[in-house]
Every structure is written in structure tokens, then in C-alpha cells.
Image (cartoon, rainbow, N blue to C red):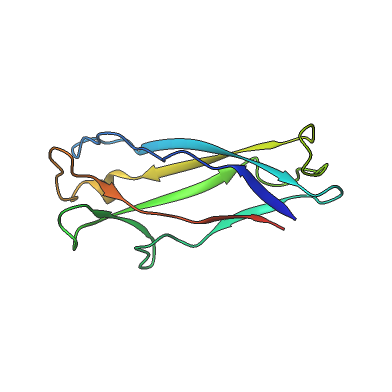
Length: 126
């Protein structure tokens, strides 16, 4: 069994210039441990709260406005666990997020405290 021992922070894309020509990217990490003798396999997720063919963040005011995005994981496979004791080895996994210019070019603008957000539940395997 593998388990997240330090939850990830927010995957924050910051302010995105809708006229920009480059991908908007963000990353965060989480830490996991695995049972002694267990080797981690790929992390998975539940696709978030607003999934419709792709992961989507929802605008905080305009409930019908969504911003598609993708996430990937690195350093999530092949970690040989040594148990859950305080001195047991840990593995830091990076979550990388990407929003392409085609995805954000037509996004509804945000002002003030408005944001696009989603909640994704991550599972580390096995």
C-alpha cells in the first residue's frame, strides 16, 4: 500500500494573459510512503469536479464558464517503500499542470477575487 503523507499544495496558474502564445503551466508536489516491499505504480485521479471529456476548472461567479486543463505526474512510479515509520524513506511526486493557448484564449475574464478552480482527488498506487 502507498499513501500520501504530505498533501499537495494548490496548483496555481496565476494570472494568464489571454493573448499569450505559450502554455500556462504550474506545479506542486506531494510526499508519499509505501509499505515495506511495495513498489509504487502510476498515480491516478478522479478527473476533478467539473470533468466533461477533459478536466475543467469552473469560474467562481459564472457557473457556466469553464477552463480546460491537464495534469501529469512525475516521480510517482518505481518507489520501493520501506514502511511508514518516521525514518522510512519518502518519495516526492510532482504534479504538473498545463493550460494551452487554445484553451485559455476564450476564457471568461476574472476580476477582483474571482478565480477558476477545481478539486481533484489523487490516489497513489498500489
